[in-house]
Length: 182
Image (cartoon, rainbow, N blue to C red; front, side, top):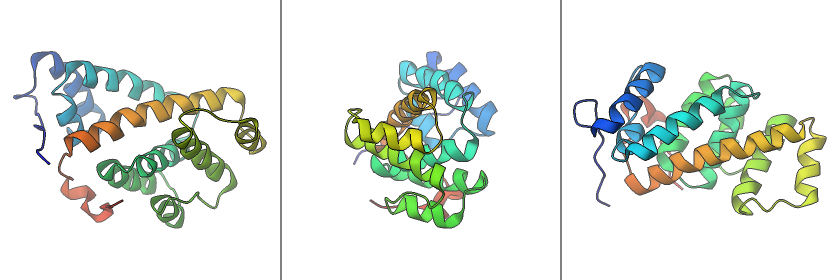
């Protein structure tokens, strides 16, 4: 597959530069996926806006990484699986739970398992949850507000997962230990 360009600050379209600066400030570098996103100023600017909402919500970082890793696996985005495997471990997820999610299973922790199952179900059913899906999530101790917040995270990760699958950015050296194939 022909790769899309992976832009840096000096090669990105003018309208993408401020968003890339934001990404660089948050990550200390510009990840290859963000560099590929910069080809479209609309995409990279939208990503920054939703990124702030995802990481400024009510879920803990391990919960967010559970959702993002589950989404990446469900959407079969190899770049995002590697990234969220690394970030999940960094956030304190159990390595066995990370491996379970990479294999398409839910984590053993009941709450993380409910989050992972909900995310996978949202993607597989294209958002058409039934009462049983909703009740299972609520029974794990989450509120309806967090069910709706989960939709925001799934939407955000869908943007990155689809972009990663379309643009096929190279995996950074720091992520190669977490390489994944669907």
